[in-house]
Length: 315
Image 1: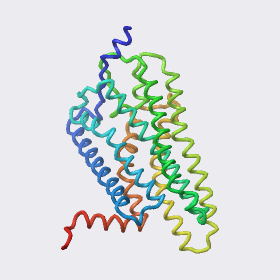
Image 2: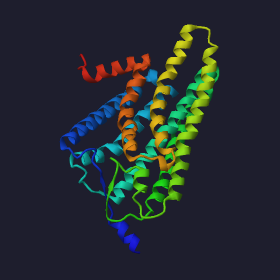
Image 3: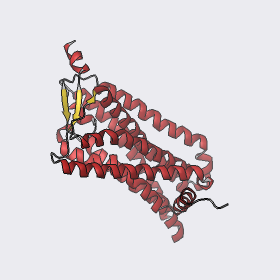
Image 4: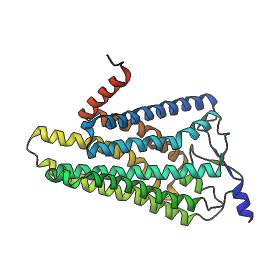
């Protein structure tokens, strides 16, 4: 009962990046700019695909869903993080708010990683089985795969978050991070967390290691298929549809795997904080840039959409 009472009155505080208020303001501005760029870039990708019938294909369907996920994913982190930056970490985060943020972070981030594996499968079918592509990648399957990614991310997040927040926390606690990350929060519990760390590694393995393995297998097959294409133009076209996705996968999986698949004894709060900036703020900004730069059809559609939105219609 005493532990339950302590847990009810818990408040978390995010540790500032720096005790220098000017440095905190600069970091806040950087985070704000990246957040707005992420909203603008991913919003533009989603709107462009939605309003251009020429992009109504499985590849762009998955890309639009990825862009929407990125918007919600970044929004789950940015507001609390930027508030803490402006107040030098003095803004309290109630236990329920911390749990909610963690749930959406794992849910949306997990669905994001699984969807990247689905997109790799789409490229595998398009390049290795082009004659059967429309038959295999039906709209029904595309919707099922997308919903499956969301459901799996939801269930894993609900299980992990519920398990972590059953731990006893006491009083006002400072988190050595800019959001409620799992390893950082678990270290603050007044209990043995070995079971919870094992659960985190299992969820991380399902969300990161298994999709990464499937992506690797898909692109090995894709690479073998491309090497057999005689036309230089054909090889270039096939590579251009895959290179953007591979770049995004490396950015997304690189830092997250280092943090969540490494042994907990090797966890460094400072390194974890720095790497977290990459996949919570930088990657969501780069994703729409990478996809639009390497895809001529999407780039042209983006330009048309921007003209329609920014330039007045002539009567």
